[in-house]
Image (cartoon, rainbow, N blue to C red; front, side, top):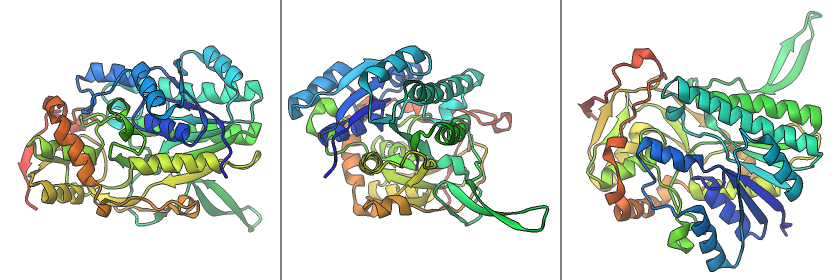
Length: 405
C-alpha cells in the first residue's frame, strides 16, 4: 500500500508537470505546485500557443476540485530568481518529495540566440542549485525527483546500449594494478538545454555525496501524446499540445502537420534515432520514482525513462501512411550526425512494473482526434524550425525538397 506523501511539483503548470501533479493528487498525495508560469509567457513570445486551449491556473485547479473533490495548492514563485521565497515555502510545506520540472525544456529555444542561451543556463542551473541548497539549509530529508533527458548521453551511433547513468570502467594504476570505478556515463550534450541537464548531473552527484540528499534523476525520451486519465476528466484540465519549431515534439508536430494539410517536415536525412515515451507513461514513471526513493547516503539513482526508439523518417512515414500526408525533407538546423543508432536500457522501470505504451498500441488515433478538433487554432507560420545551432547552418530559411523515399 502506497503511503500518502506531501509533494511539491516544481513547474507543475507545464506539459509534463500538469498531468503529473494531477496523477499524484489522484493517488491521494498532498500536492503543491510551484510555478512562475514562464511557459505561458514563452507562448506569447513565440506567437504559437498550445494547440489545445489551456485554462488559466485558477480555473484548472477549480476544475480539478470540482470533478475529484481534491485540492491542489498553487504558489507563484520563480525558483531561479527568488531563492528566499523558495526556501520559505519549503520550510512551511516540509515536503517528503519534490518533483522538479521547472526548467526551460526546449533545445531549439535554447539555441535561438545568445540571450536565449543565457536565459536557459541562468534559469535551469540557478533553479536547480537554489533547490538543492535550500534542502540542505533546512535539513529536510526530502526525496528529489528530477526530470532529465536522454540527450545528456549524446547520439554518436556506435551501437552500444546506453546504461542507466553509470559506466563501470577499469583504470590502470601506476603500480600495474587495475582499479574498478563506476563513473557517470560521459555526456555529449547537443544543445545548451542538454548542456544544462548535463550540469545538473554534477550538482546532484555533489549534493548526494556531500550532504546525503536522496535524488532520482530521470533521463526521459521524447514525449508524444497529450492526454492522461486525469486530464480527460474535464475540458479545463486538458494538457498542452506543442507543435511549433521550438517546443513541438517531433511526433506531435507530424500529427498536427498531417491534420492541417502541411507536409511532414523531416530534418536532414531523418536518420536521427531517438527514444520515445507516451505522456501517460511519463506520469506513471514519476509516480513509480516517488514510491521508490533511494536511501539516504545512496548515490544518485538514475533511470532511463523511455519506451522505444525510432528513426525520425520512419515516424514520418508511419504518420503519412495513416493520414495520407506527404513528407518533405528539409534542411537540418542542428549540428548532429545525419544518421545514428540508439540502444537504451530501461531495466530500472521495467523492474518496477512499467509496461510501456508503444506506438504499435494504436494510441496515435487519440492524438489525431485532439489535433482534428483544435487544428483551427494552429499557426502554421510557427512550424518551421528557425533556431540555428551554428553559423554554418545558414541560411535560416527552411527549404522543402521532394521526398525520394
